[in-house]
Length: 179
Image 1 (cartoon, rainbow, N blue to C red):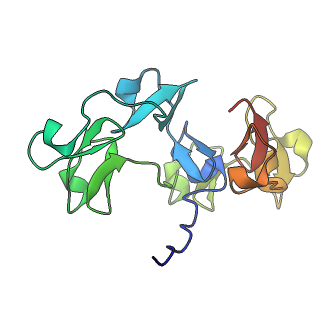
Image 2: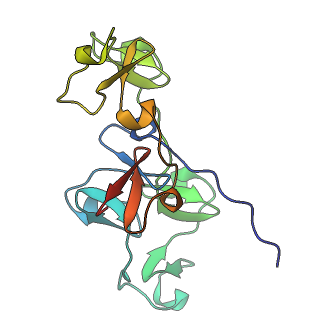
């Protein structure tokens, strides 16, 4: 066997994910209120869609699924050729519909942002002169290069869980306990 090359993370910062999602261990995790808000194979844990560590209970073998679906962690996943073949919260990953944990631009132009923000590196950002100008009620509390960014964006500590102490996860480029 030849080991596969490492897969680059989908994200490092939560700002690389859709609005309301977080970047945890290199994967965008959408916010949720129940597992019905999550893609195939995910569960809603503490308000975010994460890969379910437990069996989904739908199947044990591929034959337990309808059609040509494949049983992964007790959940039937459909085969696909493109994202259009998958349910709304999924994408086509290597021919199998799976929960979508890829990055997503929050904006492409200033017109995609509220009037008081600018689209900077695909994120709607507030302008600032110093960190005191950044709203402390938001996550972007550090002024860097004229725009408010998160502390993880200003001084990244990690890109994956491997860079964090045991029991911690890499959330928005910072090690966080209990995640």
